[in-house]
Figure 1: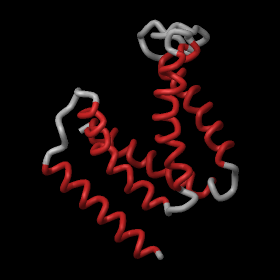
Figure 2: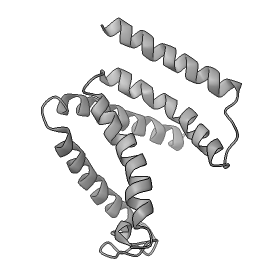
Figure 3: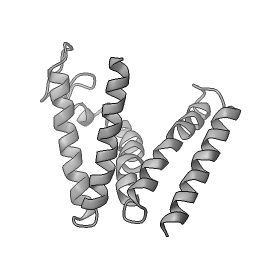
Length: 154
C-alpha cells in the first residue's frame, strides 16, 4: 500500500514539474531554467545522500561517494560527454525545450515512450532482450494517443 502511495505522489510531482515548466518556459530563458534546476537537483541529491547511511562526502571528488565526483579525472569523459549529454540534454533539457513547441499534455505523454527506447538501448548494449509484441503494441498505442491529443489541441 505504501508503494502505491509513493508512486502516486511521485506521479503528481512529475506532472507538477511538467506543468510548471510549461509556464516558466514562456517567461524565462531556457538556459536559466536548466541551470537553476541543475543546481536544485544537485542540492537535493546532496541532502538525500547526507541523510543516508553510506559514506558520502559532499566536497570530495571521489568517483564513488564524492559530491563532486563528476570532476574526477578518471571519470571526466564518461560524466560530461556520455552521461551528461545523454541524460542531461536528451533527458530533462529535451523535455523542457519541447515545451516551447508542444503542450504539457503532449510532453508528459511522451514520457510513456521511454521504456521502449530504454529497452532498445539495452538490446543494443547486450544487456536486455529485444522489445516484444506487447512493448511494440503499447508504444504504437501511446504514439497514436499523442497524435490524437495533438490534433485535438490544434
